[in-house]
Length: 128
Image (cartoon, rainbow, N blue to C red; front, side, top):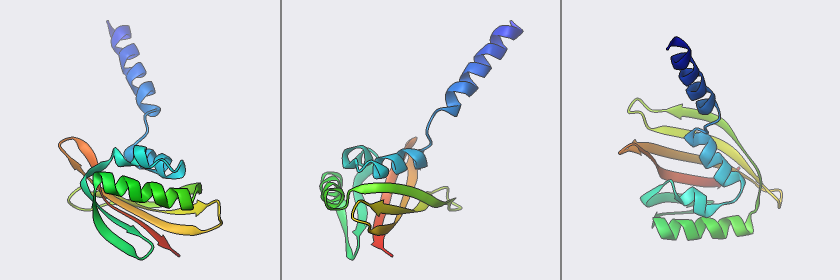
């Protein structure tokens, strides 16, 4: 019985070590330029800033705007340089997106957990 419980705990821990956290999942979507995958984290609306263009978009609109951004600025790499959370438990990250054209965008995103799901509330791509 003890061996069975130990084995189950070991398997659970092993499986969890390969699970990506939400920061990694969002970073992977940005790094691969996958607007559709990124949109799976959007709520009904998203506060989106791309350079100096800032607006609140519906989920579908935001996906299209980001898809257009990635088509003009194909990601070469994306690295998170800072992660944090607010006292309320909302989380954020700041990173650098380097594109194939050589441009670097300071990228930040903020999300909250709602109904057991991580919901992206704000996404910013700003020139440095």
